[in-house]
Amino acid sequence: MNKTEKEEMVGALSNIFNSAQVGFLADYRGLTVEQVTELRRKLHDSASGMKVLKNRLAKIAIKDTPFEGLLDQLTDTRAFIYGDEPVGPAKVVTEFSKDVEKFSLLQGILVSDTGASVLDVAQVKALGNLPSRDVLIAQLLSVMNAPIGKFVRTINEVPAKFVRTLAAVAASKGE
Image (cartoon, rainbow, N blue to C red; front, side, top):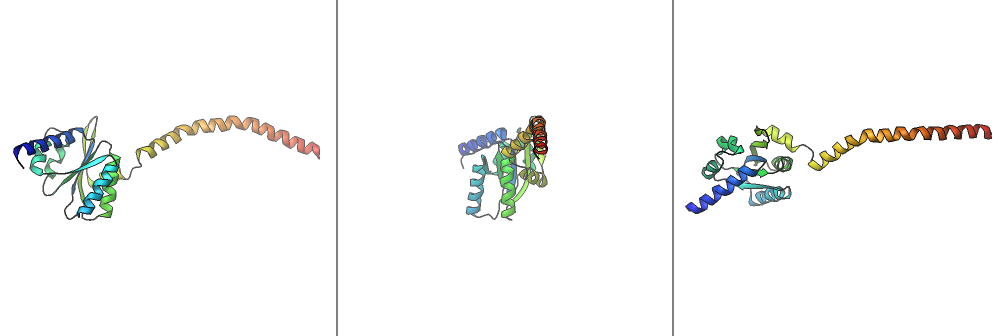
């Protein structure tokens, strides 16, 4: 690579490190091209991405970004998996690491308004086991709807009980 290509790569990596909300470092040594392609496709489907890092250039690009906590892990062969929404890439990485034993997750960082939090492998897997955003919204709406539903059923029970009482009286007089 010439100097211009290196500068472009550092700029692209710097943009990723500054804009991503979540990132994971993984060791992908031993994966076949088909496995890497499958991982990239799954990440693309979840609005995420993966970059194979050149460690020397990544160390330059990661300075003064929220992902600076990953600096000590930039050795050997590393891939950076990133996204704007934390659960999607975490799910993909968790599922992929279950299916492919040569793929090993090393560390992650979750960026929030209060700063960046370093995640270990267990925390990344816990994040990956969370329900999706749509499922969580549906559960929240269900919880919010429950009191209103109970109130409507309670209000409806008063005339229903009256009708049942009238039917019981009519049945007893009809005999």
